[in-house]
Length: 343
Ligand code: CP3
Image 1 (cartoon, helix red, strand yellow):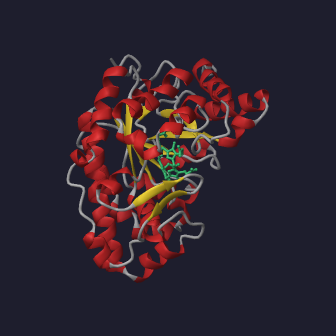
Image 2: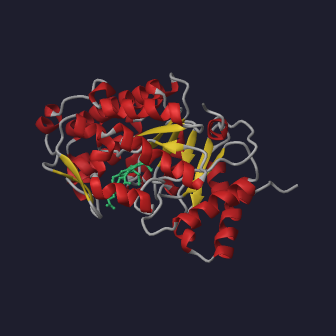
């Protein structure tokens, strides 16, 4: 039963007894228990076994006392269900058998008409909502971030192929973004219908675009996703990295909470986002490696900047790293939960 709904209250900008905290990539290689499970199962095999997947999802909730669980999966999961050959290569990331390059390539990809095409995802969600007392977050990669992997075929530094396609092949770009935004909308709504309490849209790499390019090539496709989620009533968190120059444009597409990376001062970012949205973030992930007193000061700095204002969800500015210690992350959670706004 959901006995701790701090995260949902914060996402709706309602008052909370404690600032809610969770971590992106809170399930993963920094946990000895996860590494042990990974000896037996690949990442994708974990996702395909609902019992194992539920266990991996719950582990950080019990270990760290965070205020939310995030479904253990990957942004590539629905693309695999659409028949795309993609593997997640250790220490590299997603690698496709064949990059998506032409209109024919886009047209050939079958649409995800329902998350029933990924039955193990729905099955895992059902197990989790029975087991958890904190909200369960579903998620999806946003169209630009997914397209960048599909077009490049693998992780990239310069986004040359995907941006060149975007600039030079408007019909291919439109077809790809429309196909992906329809898929993402369906996938998020189906996760909510299966029991997820809120969802996060990961547009992790959109910060590599200029603001003008974001507004021209990405922004027009976002409302069709966000409107569909809004109709369910479940809150949506929208997140990207290195997006300081995009905050107003990302806020303009809607959603309840905007993720802020660690380079921005969260109070100033919130002013730019405006009072109608909450914010999530934004401790520098590397601060977790700092000496205890430095870490404490940095956690308190983020909290002081949001000053107990309703609508803040504490998180790192990006994901947990494999070399972090469980103890340091536990400490961050404690610092957040013990914090009382001054005055
Ligand atoms: O705990 C959670 O946050 C839930 C699980 C989760 C994973 N991937 C599992 C995973 C989530 C939310 C994701 C999203 C994801 N996947 C994103 C967006 C989030 C972000 O970090 O901005 C992206 C860009 C991906 C693609 C991807 N998958 C990358 C770049 C990698 C890293 C490759 C590596 O080995 O370093 C992955 C692999 C991956 N996905 C791991 C986990 C826990 C690594 C551990 C493993 O291989 O077991």
